[in-house]
Amino acid sequence: MATAPAPTSGAASPAPGLRLSWGVVILGLLLLAALIFPYLFRLPYHRDVVIKLYLYAMLAQAWNILAGYCGQVSLGHAVFFGTGAYSSSMLQTAWGGSPWVGLVVGVLIAVALSLAIGYPCFRLRGHYFAIATIAVGEIVHTVAINWEFIGGARGLTLPIRQDSLAAFQFATAKYPYYYIILSLLILCLLVSRWIERARVGYYLRAIKEDADAAQSLGVPITRYKLIAMAVSAAFVAAAGTFYAQYVLYIDPDSVLSLNLSILICVLAVIGGVGTLWGPLVGAAVLIPLSEFTRVTFGGTGSAVDLLIYGALLTLVAVFQPTGVVGLVQRLRRR
Amino acid sequence: MLNLPSAEVLVQGVLNGILMGCIYALIAAGLSLIFGLMEIVNFAHGEFLMIGMYTAFWMYALFALDPLLSVPICGATLFGLGWLTHKGIIRRILGAPMLAQIFATFGLGIFLRALAQFLWTPDFRQVSNPWIQGPVRLFGISVGLPQLVSSLASLLAFGFLYWFITRTETGAALEATAQDRQAAALMGINTERMFSLGWGIGSACVGVAGAFLAMFFYVFPYVGSLFALLAYVIVALGGFGSVPGSLAAGIIVGVIEVVGGLLIAPAFKYVAVFLLYLIVVLIRPQGLFGKF
Image (cartoon, rainbow over all chains, first blue to last red; front, side, top):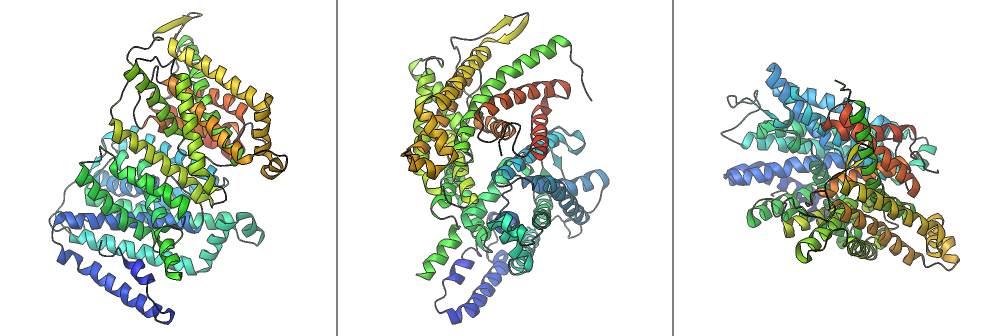
């Protein structure tokens, strides 16, 4: 939560000449706040909420690279999350490997998988691509449920080890998890920022605006869509390994479900799709909100959080397609 | 890995597949009509079906009205829901970027599903004693009577829809709007009204299908997801916007589902359907009967 207002207050600075320096100061303060957060809030519950916030912000940010910048709406990103989670978990349970090696293996498999899915599916445009990714997601989900080798519907329970960085387990002191996911999120943000300003970013946005025009101007559209998909999948898979190490139990419904794919999009769209800070803002608003409604209305059984998600998603799409970040930018220009 | 079923089981399976396929086709026809009209995919289509099923269920639970009798009520309710969706949401996103178009109806779907769960709990409900129930023997093959009646009625509804689009003046106006919005407007067609009408009719299709499904299927907030996924596959397979294409594709999907389940394993029946969809769409992106 500490980082939540980052872009908002950064964007609200008054004089244009001061903007850059103010932005840097505010970013620095927020980073500092994020770094000392575990020392200020010692309750496991608070730390857990913020760890989840960073995790989902990272997922939404990674999805944003493909959907926001390149305009390819994937509704099956859970496939890569599951790939990351299952790769590292299988490596440990079946062959006793290190989770860090598992993270790298998971990322590599996810990248290969993203190319294998993307190459044929990128022939489809717009709504067709979105539906094809749902189909891929459902196939992978069903296969995982029925594949006994990887635990089937029962899922995988990771062996409990002595807390250490090498084992990627910190059961007693949760804060190493906090710093690991914070670093991953910052890395993801830095890569997004680099893509935004590099040639790749211009190509991706050109494909989003008008794929035919981009192609006629010499942009190799399939290659750049694949690059966006691979980068996106790599970060999602890394987050998947983190999730497995944090929860120490995975099953197809928690890491491969359509609902997870949907949640990722919801966060990015409400925060502001195609912007650097949108996914983080979306997660900062919605993850605590979801925790709050669960505590207040008792579990997810009453679906109050989904009720709010759905209504917000439609309202944002209809009235404010650029999300919270776009709204702030518009208000600032007044 | 492959199980070979006996000929009798296979024939029975194929027949059941065809029957289910007719109902799938009616659900998909609504989706296809809307897409053909304005190139927007209704990602809340499954939730519309769910609302149709709940309407039939509550008519039964509160007023002891058999699902067969509530078919017109469900159709009318969903017509209203579709009309309102166009007036309230779709009208505003016609020229919007694709992302906004996808997430506007997607959000509506999540909202309706959560609303159903909030109001009526996630419990599975069932119309416990409908008029039409039990199996019936047909040429020595046993099929469910509700399935048989539903699919015949779906075919009838499908035929009515086709007649309406191709043979009536309003249908011609719909077709004209689908082909060229501006030219249709210049000919004096109120395209705005046609869009609302298209959303109404497209949604009424799932209302009718929902009433029939309620006779033999459980009703719960998430029931729409599976049917919606199949409907997307059917519409893409048949060719987006091609209403007759969805009938053929619906039956193909119904048969593949059953035969895939028999040959590989029941758990994999939808995998077979989705794989078929991916293969067809990759070879022929416009679908089996698509025009462009």
